[in-house]
Amino acid sequence: MKKDQTLGETLRQQGVSRRSFLKFCATTASLMALPPSMIPVIAATLEKARRPSVIWLSFQECTGCTESITRSSSASIEDLIFNAISLDYHHTLQAASGSAAEEARDTAMQENHGKYILVVDGSIPAENNGYSTIAGISNVDMLKEAAAGAAAIVAVGSCSSFGGIPHANPNPTGAVSVSDLIKDKPIVNVPGCPPIPAVITGVLVQFLTFGLPELDHLGRPKAFYGQSIHDRCYRRPFYDKGLFADTFDDEGARKGWCLYKLGCKGPTTYNACATEKWNDGTSFPIQAGHPCLGCSEPDFWDAGSFYRSLSTPTENIGKTAIYAAAGGLLAGAIVGSALRGRKQSAVKAHQRVTIDDLDKES
Amino acid sequence: MTVHGTPGASPGCGSDTPCNVPTGNVTPLLHEVRHALERWLDAGEEYAIDLRGIPMAPGEEDQLLGTLGEGEVRADLSLTGKTEVVETRFPAVWLVTHYNADDTIIGRFIEVCEMPAILTSQAEDARAGLEFLENLLSENNLQ
Image (cartoon, rainbow over all chains, first blue to last red; front, side):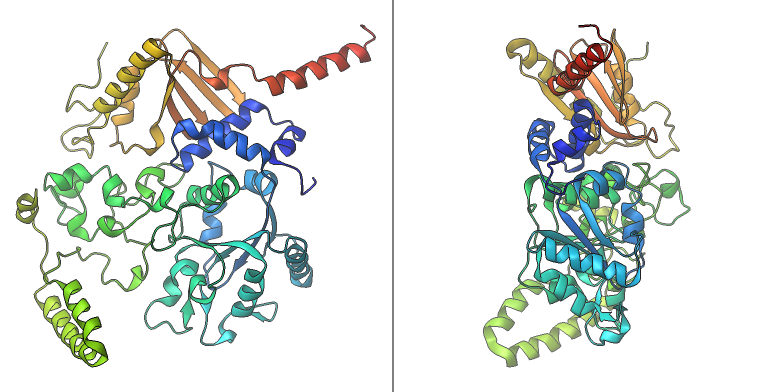
């Protein structure tokens, strides 16, 4: 298969019918949360698209993100590898190993300099390079070398997006995210522990179709991370009616009421779990009766107990911070000290939202 | 026949099951279909609704599909994974369901149109078919 072939040419050569292609475009539009009216646009663009080279680097990770993408059923990994992209390096999936694998990476980087997509999963140990190396090359060096010739970087998973679990307190390896180290390339963060497989493939297809997607303030594509779990949750009506499960085995839990009081982080978590779901669209944690852990948000592991409910703010912290900035470092230090004191007080006087509070707000 | 869509009626859900409080999305969706059907009749404007991105409580999609029902036309397409195209009991309102090779649903659309595009013959496929037919005739000396 020629690398400069368009996707349309490749598909026709493989005997894929136009109807099958339209089906792929329809499910892809659905995946990217685009209106069905965009299906003809996707078809026209994808048909002319050329297969980009993809180099996938895995650093401090658990292989959960790769496990996730290989379970993708919407745009299958086979579709992506053989039709839409040229996956030239992925040390878990590729057949080559050792020096042959690294040669494949070098060749792909040279032949596609400035044009390839670099996918990264796992965080990078910044304090001591010895914590994680591949073929004797430190993660930092390999990332910087591969990033230099990349057109764009896709950070797959919470570890490469925000540091993830390796970054959790006390962060023994000094783990950092891709965006902490690379400042001169467009970076798309696809967080989640792991991310939803359809979201990973959707972002790659979106890049292929429309280029860099629109991102939110944390570098996440808005198509998949634009709404909170809470806003798309089928249990939301229970929240609005003030119907909550208080324990995992009470009447509310059995009736499938809102899991807010059991620590659900849905209101502060932006991801597509409530609509894309998991295991081929079967379910997602809240539907299975467990609160959302907020795994697609930065530092979710250090945000306190998974089972402590989100509380309402008790003070205007924002106004205090503005005064600190205006007053200079000394004032900042004083206010910072005051904030720590207030934080301790707030922890002691931790207030939980009650049904009565919700009634007052509505 | 049971007409689904009655407020609060969730087939298969009892008072002790998780679906006794619906999202309330079924009735607005049916009205969206009604408006689309009016526009198609008045101006020929085609319309499609992607059901994948709409939150549904367990049982609600069945409620919606039960209300749409099945009309005179059903077509099963053998693509990469099958695709079912069914005209609902409301003519010109179609339900298109895409499956992957493992028979898992990967997309479901309500389309309001004369016929979903995926059912019509495609010029690119027809060109390949013409070439194949010409070769067949040539190879068998039937010119």
